Amino acid sequence: MRMCAELADLGMKLARGAAARALADWAEREEPATAEALSEPEIAAPTRLAAAAKPPRAVGGAVRASTAKPTDPAVIFTRLAACVRDLIGLEVRLAAGPATPGGGATKSRGTSLALRADPRRADLHNVFRRITEHHPDRTELLRETTARVDEDLANDPDRTLDLSNIFFSICEDFGIEVDLARLPDRFLGSIDDPADRDDPDTIAS
Image 1: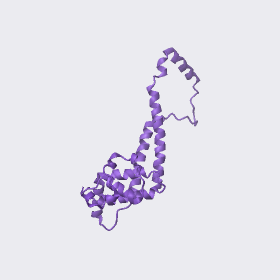
Image 2: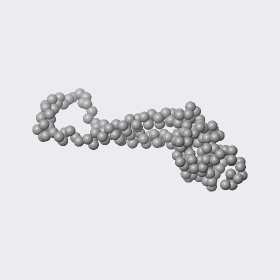
Image 3: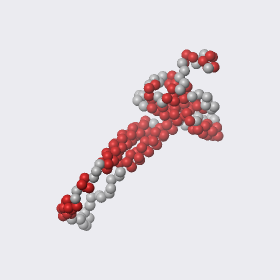
Image 4: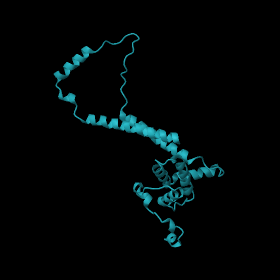
């Protein structure tokens, strides 16, 4: 997981560089071409001079300079983005760990399919990846929170709990401090007071 995170970080740096290069090339293409402002005689003269100054073609075993066209920075960015996406997915799968033994192959497969079909799962995994990005024990914490998310969702097959209930319960148990300003609104839909969780009137409401 540590290596996946490191590779993903390096991939993002390279992707940012490729994106900057692609945007710069795009901006240059948007500017009027200088060559279009020149007349044909003005273009022809330098062309003839360049042709005359062109060195003779190498013969025999001489090595010629490569004339391959460089890869478009936009293509490089797209490939790097795909690699980073795959690395993030691999990191999440590694954090989830192997399936819990003892439940039988059919039961484990059924539970896995049910979890993957739960729309809350991806949101919760992603938000914990975000808020633990700079945590010193990120790898271990991400592994534990991922397992806890799957456990809580498996125990709530009817999906009665919303994202905020599950999220803040896990944060409280693991002592994770949350910056509410950086949370998506869907995680702030129902924040209850921990002191009221055992209050029958609060639960009934």
